[in-house]
Length: 616
Image (cartoon, rainbow, N blue to C red; front, top):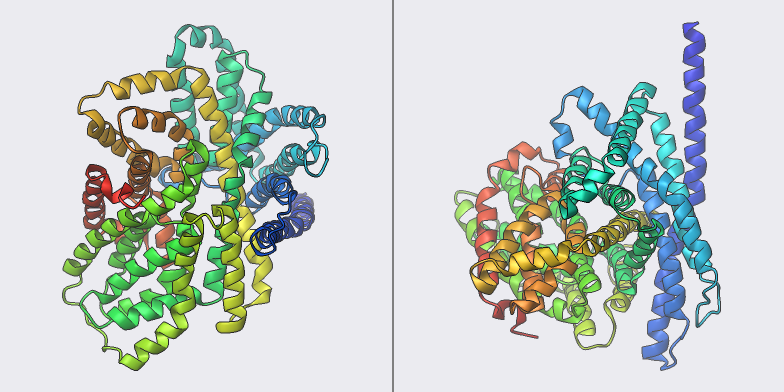
């Protein structure tokens, strides 16, 4: 009997593995090709318009159609690989029974969200069938079908993952969700009677509970929004699908996958390593020199990749071994790596800058210009702390002039790329989306012809990594857009505006309140979800109290960056530990002086608007 049970279990596991392998083949290669085609279409549009002076009228339209498919298939790849953003710090502290429940909820909540949403996604796609695209003359269902198809694929993957969990735990998880749904349905009259206080139930208690239990953030947003709309309003749930479509379809967001891929390219082609080697030849012989090299490298690399994880992964493996040889403690390395990640959040082309421009209407060109000096202010503050804390460490030999010139020649193509990107956007030669394709072409040429370091075998994995990260980000943006719509329709935004505008201290008092709020939000939600959710609510208030929108953007981005990299909740801190292969405990005490320096720098940026808008 026992042998028969084991055989059935093995057969079941084998069947699940075969189904997952088939889904992987079905999804991954088309998704990788989508990223590649998207790059080629946009690059062709740039070359045709600026090189041949014959614009392709259909290129943006085709890019928009492909982009929604890329977002949904990328989210499916992220689901397949377990790459959707989630908070795990609290789950790790739970007893084994709590961790098992969290593992079930992390799959059951997305399953419930997708099951409820799928019929409305299909209805939405059918409604879009009557709309014809202007340039290509296609039915808009060609684009909108990405929503139900991507949702169905994600649902299939969630079902596979649930099948691998203990059936009793899965049953308990769904019973718990059914109990919550029944309580909401029975309590609907009371929830309606308390007015906007019911927002606390859905968007504080329910949402926070899901996030703290490790439910992927995008699905936590979406589930809380569906629960709110279905329980206390008569709004058709198709609106959630349409808001998700709107949130994920902005052409400016095309820069997200393209800059992610560019960041992977500069690491693969050796451009990041060349920049670090040049900076080390200049500063490696002075006290704390490699700390300054790390800060400078993060400043420069952030201007290329737009992804903090890619930035840290490009810099840390190059510098950490030498810094350890000179006597630096592992905790100190993680502390300054995390702090430099927070410092570089405003350096273009940061994905958060692009997201702010998309959801608030602030000029991305102005944001790219305004982000350089605030990042420099925080880098100087971190440099002072690094100088004090590097006493007693060994210094390296001073590089000769010949060595410096040699490393400069090798690094020059990489050093020029951030300035090419910034100049092209600021001068209007290309948009933020288009300039990323120029950067990709530039990196490919440098890798092939100059560095001669281009591993073709890594291209498809890099395209898939790009799609997974982009899909995870874009799903958050889509569901957060739906949540922001629900909050706005409830009248919460007007109440928030009135209460914050009435706070004492004028514009600076409002700025201080915003700093506190976004440090907290950054530690819990990360930068992109927080700004998508609260940016449309708070930026109009900032303008009303006399704060320049670029100045306000710099302050809230830096505040979110500090929260993102501040332990014990900041997930960026744990990402830095993983990249540096150091235990989180090692850096927990050492990071606070760096965070204090960041806060001083942030207050300086908040108090002196010129630092953000002086070069606009």
